[in-house]
Image (tube, rainbow, N blue to C red; front, side, top):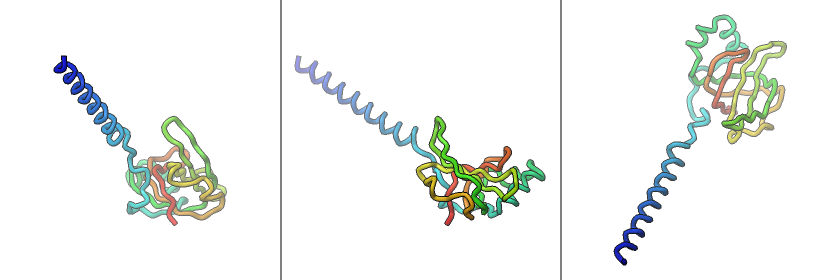
Length: 147
């Protein structure tokens, strides 16, 4: 009888260790948060909002080749700041736009990186992010405010 209880205890310990290992694996590898900011990375291109938007308006294909998936440092005036919540993340979106223009640059920040009140409409800012393409605005993700 004692041998059987030892086998049960050893089996339970093995199962608990496997569960613990599984938890650690899931926490650190499966749900590991990707780099959410490009703050520490060097920009591939530095450009103004008006020049970036103009590039896409003139020749979207050429602009995609030049800017898509690149780290862009864009300088411009804040038009609007929005607090966005979706199923996957909470974000702050800062819209940079020249006065009187319909298109601008939409910069998405992870909410853990920036507070909504960090900038306000009319502020002149520099933002670094990864260019994701052009819809009605140039879209930049994983952004960081550059001071």
